[in-house]
Length: 508
Image 1 (cartoon, rainbow, N blue to C red):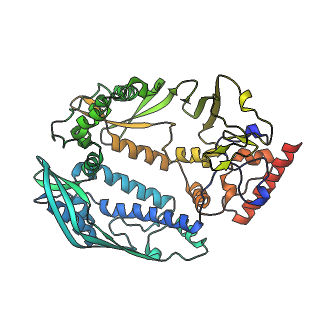
Image 2 (cartoon, helix red, strand yellow; image 1 turned 90 degrees about the horizontal axis):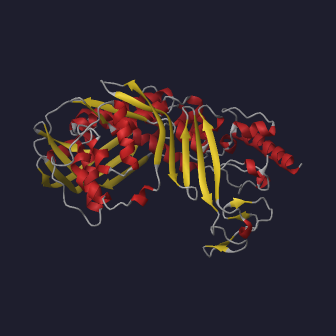
Image 3 (tube, helix red, strand yellow; image 1 turned 180 degrees about the vertical axis):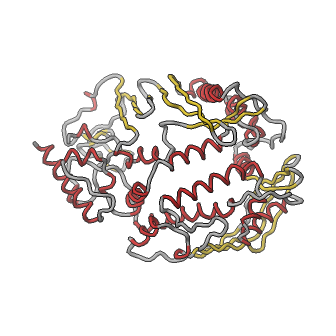
């Protein structure tokens, strides 16, 4: 395999020595001790399960009698492991979005063997939480809106690894580690936490979105004034589901923030409408150059039925251009394949051989400006004049799905086929951002299977370097790719043979 055929995401080997001088290079994998990566992975699973604990039930309640009461209800329910109480302390519009999302993620976790089949969101085993000495203070931000600050208290938590409802995939990762992973117990101070409570239907509940918005406002420099709640940017929808998406795309490329907010549902995203004037003010000085030449062309949309009378608008094809021929990118999607073309120019971005980078290290003789010349001669002054470009293409079902780009796409977060959820109210259609996010992630999760999950966990938590290589690599060296269940020793042995074969081919 020649140097020009290397994948754009590949980087040279730094280990093991037996592969250091080979022509084919590997894609980047995670670095660091496997035990640390396992701990991070387990912590992520625990975080998802803990979130599910608080959102498992959509119980209706009258709310607390005052803002501090809403926060006490929240922390009291956490301390008592009362899932119904936790949900009652969250605003109805937010929990109505989060509940189905968490339930779906839990179901997918069971299907993919990440969580055990007996995972129960009403009573998650292996986690103990205890809130002690809670002290609060509050002040009004506006009519029906209050800031509650935790001035004292602590949260004690303990995790028993063996009792957690972890599935076979996670248990296999734990079993592969050389050292045992111990149970953990921690105590964290709660002082300084600030939460916003809203009065809805006569009772007070905590709002996660308003709490985030207030944190962003307070951190701004200079800090803007508290908005006038209920007097922000009014919603103004579109005549059809497709029109809502097309108008949103046009507003985004034109940096028309106000129109984007108008097109969102004020039911789900009241926080955007209340804080909208502050957002518009923060972006009003944006110049036309800030758009960086962004354009969307040949956008083909398809509308599907969603849940509860909503519609899902899916992009079946599009072309996105960013920047220009000297510094930019073109992304084209045809319904199955995504092609990304990067534009650049050499100009004066290259350094001379042997000159230090940042005054710290010397440039290797065979590396110029980040381009590996494979030991050949390269004169920066003789580089091609004018715009240059490089193109990468991948399609649904390609074996490169395990590459970094393919991995993100398979999880539904790539730029392939965006799905936008819209809803109708009073004859107009509005975009529903949170449901859009969860719908996209849900669609991505449904595309992966247990085999892919096992491969992903082995790639990120162990020494199975051979799993990072696409099928094309194995085809080129004419060596059969090991199965996903192959041992680390067998898989890496096959990798060494394939690398050696690639070196021999490059030398002929």
